[in-house]
Amino acid sequence: MKIALLDDWQNNALTFAEFERLKPEHQLDVFTDTVDGALLVERLQPYEIILAMRERTGLRVDILSQLPHLQAVITCGMRNAAIDLNYCKAKNIMVCGTESPGHATSELAMMLIGMLARDLYTSVHSMASGGWQVSTGRDLRGATLGILGLGRLGSQVAQLGMAFGMSVQAWSQNLTPDRCSEEGVSYALKDDFFSTSDFISIHLKLSDRVKGLIGVNELALMKPDACIVNTSRAPIIDQRALLAALQEKRIGGAALDVYDQEPLPTDNPFRGLPNVILTPHIGYVTAQTMAVFYGGMLEALEAYLAGQPIRCLV
Image 1 (spheres, rainbow, N blue to C red):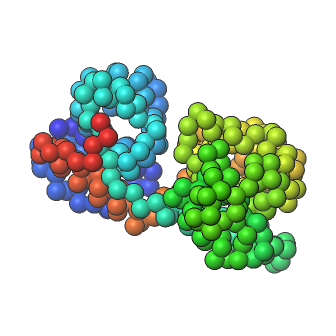
Image 2 (cartoon, helix red, strand yellow):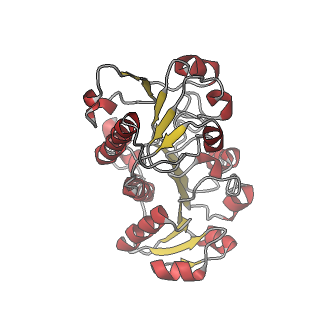
């Protein structure tokens, strides 16, 4: 079998699982860059199995339909919005997943909230360039943390916020006061949520219903010193509206780990803004999580090759 392992951005995938266990008759090729369109089709056409790291490469109908040899896709986690599962089902392409720890993203979100509160990026840069104190931060204790989406990750961030003494409230389109009560957080109506939160952290699954959920009106409701953190998916925020709000300093700042295009182009206008912290989609990128992902990927691959597929999505 010819197997393609995609989007190994740090060129270390093979260190997290014993891929050398694969029998010699199987060819495993690792790709460290991300391509799309005709280049992606040309790259993948020879392969029978694709190992996909999260949603870094989109496996849509326009791509999948041009891969005549493809038999299986193995993705990290048990959900990948970048894979057209309906097409795979129709064409009998097996799709399998892995376990997903999840907590690493919550930890990063809380770290970014802390960095925004204390303006740590500015202070670190000052020290690195020979300077000293340049900014005065604010306390987390007593501040209001707004959680947009109180699922697994949102609930974890809520608990971390409370550990810092923050007042935590939540809102999303389907969220109920009873659900908030279960997690020990306050339920807020939409406008109150945006107008009273000092920090907003986004934890929603991407769907058409939430694309552009945070736009001009929502950003206008925010306090002038309020900050927003997005470790979820970029399209949940209207990117042009966010850029304008940051450039015009109508909100306090933002920390972003996800982008419309990844890797983020070098000329992207968010780069270099003084009130923005940018991280390169590392929410889930920890050694422990990668060991689970790649270990599960290898396990699922071996099971498929043995004719006994596991954790099947299709």
